[in-house]
Length: 118
Image 1 (cartoon, helix red, strand yellow):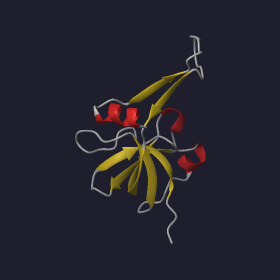
Image 2: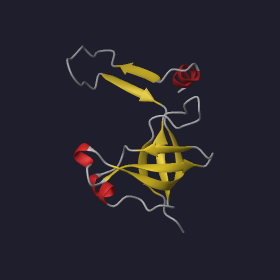
Image 3: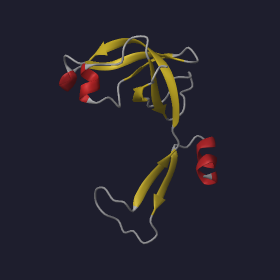
């Protein structure tokens, strides 16, 4: 973990882990793995963006507001069922991201779930 933190502190995305006995294989291989840091956060659903292409007629992305007041869209991580019945406006969702952009917007935000309200 120390090496991963050192790399990400210098602006790197993460580490590539290579099995010491692994040989090169064209395509996917378990001999070379990416290791990246992710952060979980929550946001409030403000609105929806209509889907395009294979998501025509369904939700394409949700417009959310983070705890820090930043407004952005999340369009990844949704199942087809969730796109047909998206999180309610005003609900709180959990999402995962890979750090923040210079303007404070979560980078590569991915929907995880609707938070259970008490």
